Amino acid sequence: MEQQEKKGFFRGLVDKIAGAGQPQTNDIEPSPTAGEPPATPSAGAEERPDSGPGFFSRLKNGLKKTKDGLVGRIDALVLGKKEIDADTLEELEEILITSDIGVKTTVELIRSLEQRLGRNELKDGAALRAALKADILARLNAHHSVLDTDTRHPFVLLVIGVNGVGKTTTIGKLASRFTGNGKRVLLAAADTFRAAAAEQLEAWGERSGVDVVRHKEGADPSAVVFDACKAAVARQVDILIVDTAGRLHTKVNLMEEMKKIHRVIGREIPGAPHETLLVLDAATGQNAVSQARLFKEAAGVTGIALTKLDGTAKGGIVVAVSHEFGLPVRYIGVGEAIDDLRDFNPQEFTDALFQA
Ligand SMILES: Nc1nc2c(ncn2[C@@H]2O[C@H](COP(=O)(O)OP(=O)(O)OP(=O)(O)O)[C@@H](O)[C@H]2O)c(=O)[nH]1
Image 1 (cartoon, rainbow, N blue to C red):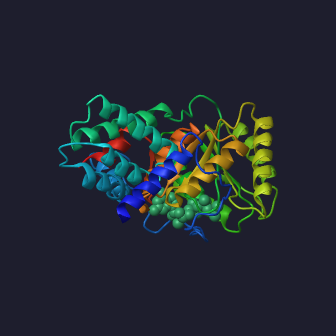
Image 2: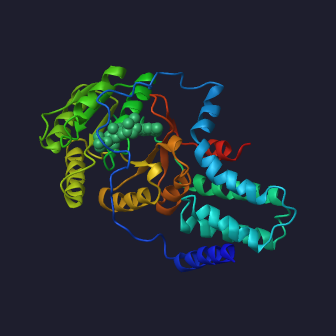
Image 3: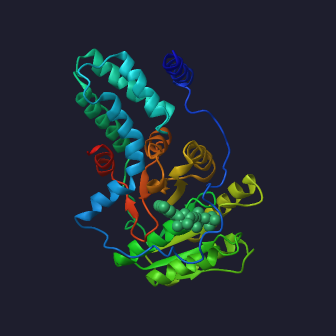
């Protein structure tokens, strides 16, 4: 009876929201892991090779919690099942929704499976599992594109997001990867709001031999950006990465500042920023979805980096942010080490989740 009520609740929720998109909230709470991040990169952040046979298994390890929470529960439901019926799909629906895949995407996935069931394509649990994986992969592929920084010189990468999501760490990891590929990189410390932000960025810059343009704490971020754009052109760097504040006195201030930074960059380097990368902490689940909505509308986001996938069972959020907002997930963070930022690859991601 209890189970029946629960199922009814999810069915009701889905019916209510189907076609209406996600519930609208505007909160942009900082990441729960926010706080004063270390002034220097994490002590455990040892450099490791960026590829090799262990690479896929490291991704799998990084996604272990999501795999256990999402695919582990799906397997417990479907594997060994000789017959799939509407009740199975209803239980699957509940698993998907509680795994942060998002209501809109869950509704689509279940409808697709219902159609397959109607066509007699879902003969057993294994067939259902394979169909679900293919449907998730198709949705991830629909919005996927790799960030190509070779198209412009300098390529300006503006990095935004609320405090504590991992912006500075992501920039440090990107600087290391770009310099490793022979690119000349410059960093701009436009987070002048938080005391240690520029020092933290400098610490990351030092690790890759990359300069940082910075002003004093409390300076106008747009002035930093102006100087950084001038320097990037004068020094003929390949990529300028701009770090921004994740917290200001009000949300409105934050959005206005993002717009101003955008304008200054565009005035100095026509067509720039070439990418506005929104960093989201996967562990914040639906709050990350709210942030994506808000920043997409206010700051012209063109791509997403999803961090801290290693520490959460909420990895389904990758599907939600990409599919619900039509934004490409460019990078995923699966640990604190310098090489724990990976190009997002839908095939690799779904393989890592679904492979036994
Ligand atoms: N486990 C894990 N930790 C991460 C990842 N990315 C970042 N972190 C950690 O998240 C914490 C916050 O990272 P920061 O880079 O300082 O976050 P920020 O968004 O720049 O924060 P503010 O400067 O306050 O705006 C640090 O302890 C990082 O080591 C990741 O992919 N996995």
